[in-house]
Image (cartoon, rainbow, N blue to C red):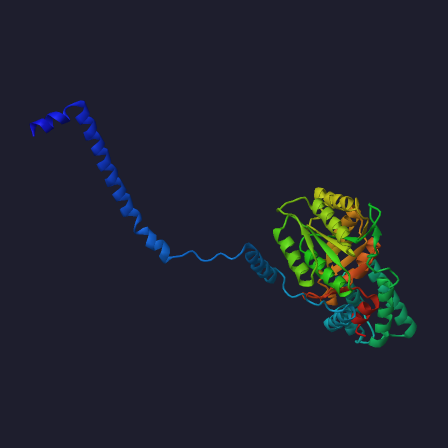
Length: 389
């Protein structure tokens, strides 16, 4: 025993002892590691990873689901002739100017207060001072010549005067003929839609797309109202309903002129018939915003000439609407008026006053909230409706 102890105190003994210790430690470590990993192997086998389908199958399913989610069945817009008949009937049922005036004439011999009531009725209907005086003068002359005016005679005279003032001779067709683009090839007709906040511009643009699709025209919409996030979404909804592409900015507050330029570009490349550009509502008192409209038009015309600049007016705004129309006409050059909210003809006189003031025709009218409640303006139908024929 003493001999063994003496041996491990020598250098050789110490070396052997160290080697033995290292081997023992290594065995212990290996045993510990094996003990920890052993339980994990069954767990892996208990929960095998689900089989992953080939990449092309994943892509095909995603595409099918996306298409179903964002591409609802396309709607069939109402035919133009049908919608005009329906809207004319709606206006006739609402009464308005004609009913109020004929009720006065039904009283028989008219007193001074009766004539004042007739004048007030015309002015309240936004016919305007000048046209009102013309109508009153003609009615008085006829009353003197005939001795009196009963309701039927008054209706006849009123219809003639209103029709003359509405002026059926004005060209109310939309200028949607193909144009020569700056590149030299044939390009789409370009329409710019402007107006103040709350007149229904974006809705009008969507309804116009439906109206044109009913005439089998291909359309591209430009969402140049980049200051109101909901405007682009609203226009996209209208576009998806009738299969019309919508060009919009990829960020809120983007440059509206750039959107207008891109919309025209898309229309050119796609060979579309019409490009309609919606713009942000703006107060006519904001000079910088009005100047921006001029810029949008100039940018569009780098590719194609703008054939129509349509001002959307709320028919119920009266003389305030007239002031709006004047400023917009100066800023961007109006070619036509779209009158919205003409559901009742009590304010129908604005058709007369706005045309007389601007010298441009009312081309479209909206008489309801439905998607097809927009139609070309028919002067004879309008007058017949409000005088009750």
